[in-house]
Length: 247
Picture (cartoon, rainbow, N blue to C red):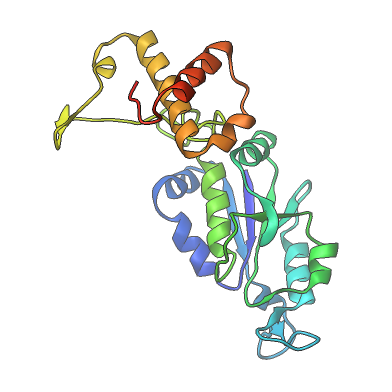
């Protein structure tokens, strides 16, 4: 999979992908990454990429031409240009999985300052994605989140092929609790079922816990999940009892 990032701070991108899963995957050739600095596509001696907004107001606005020229240099066949913006569609696990399955090349535009000239968004960008209803100083951190979320789903990137499949949101539910050694910590013990060696019982417990965690923390997600009859029966138990019940 290929990522191109348009950013006036390319070192932020490179420093963010050098470590951990993304760093190992990049070294192994699991994905391609190139960062393009709009300043390299300016024509004035000061490499100006921003200017004052028409109509007045605070802040500066990123100019159309340096960004458009950077996109033209980065563009490959089938690539989608994504502007990372608080006004965009909220990024979800389903979007992430869909783009990874399609192996869609992405050009991620990391904005700065007060924003980007609207004509660039209208004419050049294919989509807008948001991480949530809050504001960052720039789009570089959002670009790194997108890259990390997608790279970890690429074949051979994670140590165990089921690691990504069992994460929160991968099934539409939150993840179940996890435990490791020692068996007792601060007066709490590992649930007996996890020590039983009964794989079916463990699988059922984990599914119940995922449903319970979702019911308690993000009940809105249950409206979008395809639930089995057994799932619905377990949920009925939760609603009829104290939400703090331990299964």
